[in-house]
Length: 64
Image (tube, rainbow, N blue to C red):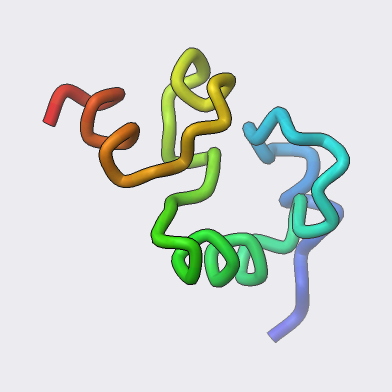
């Protein structure tokens, strides 16, 4: 499968611009899941800006 990094980078909502995984969604997801986290794109903007990628933060952000 072809990587769509250029396209993904343009629509990525993560505000951590210096991340080397930015736009490479498969690497980003693999990294965060290994850390028991979710990537920034799973969060609403105000929660993403806190850089707390934990499952608890995800549930809190979405009122779960």
